[in-house]
Length: 605
Image 1 (tube, rainbow, N blue to C red):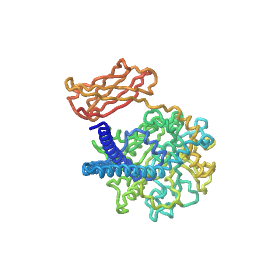
Image 2 (image 1 turned 60 degrees about the vertical axis):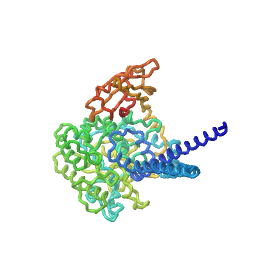
Image 3 (image 1 turned 30 degrees about the vertical axis):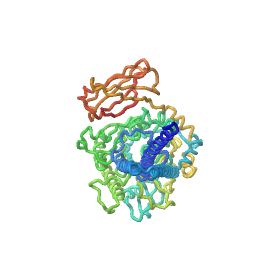
Image 4 (image 1 turned 135 degrees about the vertical axis):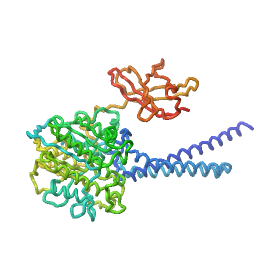
């Protein structure tokens, strides 16, 4: 065989291998990508690019296991099937070279087209072009209209009122019937409708429900909570979106929690899920020093059965029972209190239908869950109204954001304006213009909540919010909602300065070397340590194999001549287990504050 024949044979084999490699990689990746995109939009039909960017840069900790399993069940089987089909095609046509080449090229072209189609769909649905344009355009809207609470005189009444603030997950005025301002022939929230109509939702002389608009960057839970307590959108520069690595949430911003803390309030956040998810623990612990009673607290205190977990943690019927328990305790204190609750049963997709919920709307689960939530909230309010402390207590009920359920509102016309539910109960203030139907956003809850507690606010504005009990115009009334949405979608020098403290996350590369069966040790190597302030005094490694870290061992890596850190994990000390080795690496800089670098879970081969 001459050199030319050898070269041709080598070229054919290389092409053969390259076609197979590309067909497998592109085929599997395109199916995984397309199914991931379908799952994403089926799960969050109203997803925005702002929300996607925020959660992609947030920690997984606290995420519902159901969500993760839904993704796995939706995407993994199709991906495995695609791989099997490609392998079968390769085996069938292995000896039919021309058919093999045609099949491989066909799979490659189809994979590229499939990925291209779904990437284009994502580009259009998330309006990435407009998002990118806005992120490259600066607006002075926030800079010009923000009122810093630290620059405003805020006076509390001599007898301070208690506050119960209830965030209702995905609760909209849309769920009411048409006659009462909703979008459905039959109301799913008659009890909540009655509460709003008998109390205050700033609908003036109108019988129809009124509520707040959710502006850009306020349309997911932690962003909604931040908007309603700080009067600001959750706008974080993309290059600095590292909330999972921070020890503070919008450092320097003064929120409702901060103001109440300075006024001597006892503050508690009560939620049925893991407060860490999405940065909620960081927000409330850093702004008001809230005592946080979440799912983990309930589990550790034995308030729920051992191992009990439904939906995102525990259901709302337990939440309201725990709230009563909290209120009995808080009302015995001398200091005023703020109890903040967040419901979860009405979360996407289709919500959680507990055993107490009747199926009055047949097989429409989300409708049944919404109706059940309406009843439970009303029952809780009635219980509060029977208590001695109610006379000096204001209740605020607010939807956090419009629903993310994929299909419940799909028949609601585009001409209908969707708003989140609002009700102020037992307020110490009365509207200056009682007949006026107000146009407002969820930013306005910030000063309005304080005013409902009898607090006097110089100028009646805080953050981007306006006290709705006053006669001052809201920003939505002054500029109109459409302009606000455009301006808030753009970059802001003010927000960049506000988030300039956010630093890049410390990180490192952790490499597991070959297990030495003769010594029972697993060597590891830690390299490329970045973003650690100051000189590194030590690199510590935490290793455990059992749930709950029952067999946790701390070890210290030593630097070598190349500036890398190395050490051996003694597998014998873990009973020679071969799987579930959790390895976390921490740096101790010269300031003595330990920082997380990286981690992995591994099995021993």
